[in-house]
Length: 169
Image 1 (cartoon, rainbow, N blue to C red):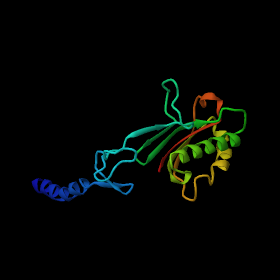
Image 2: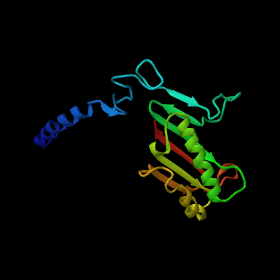
Image 3: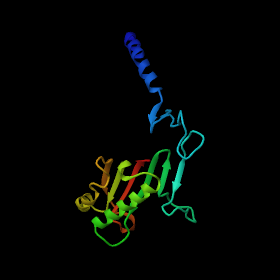
Image 4: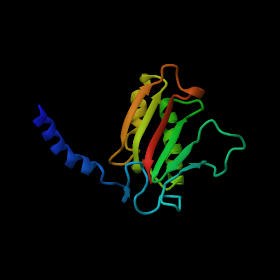
């Protein structure tokens, strides 16, 4: 039994050494705690990335908002869920939402092709096919991963679809 422990320790040492090597992300070495080991983070002069909130119209709201529409952290972009709050069908709602997402991404130097993860929330699964008809091809030849669900109690604001995403710059 003690030889099994010695074998485990002997084999585990190289694995532990590899785990301690900084991870390369976005062309810069990243330490395990997320600090950049070399270079400077986007939008910050002290080597660490920081959270930056962006507003589509370029100005902060007069009151403290419930959530931020666009947040960047280093080279990552996070877009809040966007819905379509007007009369229409799933195709018009999906097209509107995707156009807004594209505008938000471009406002911070990203694009639909740089999206890594998409979450789609439908008011009803009956709209799945119609949403997909508009969705297909909007993300380039290599779209990111996607999760699609029907929200149990519907989408806030009577939208038929809400979509959020994570991208890189």
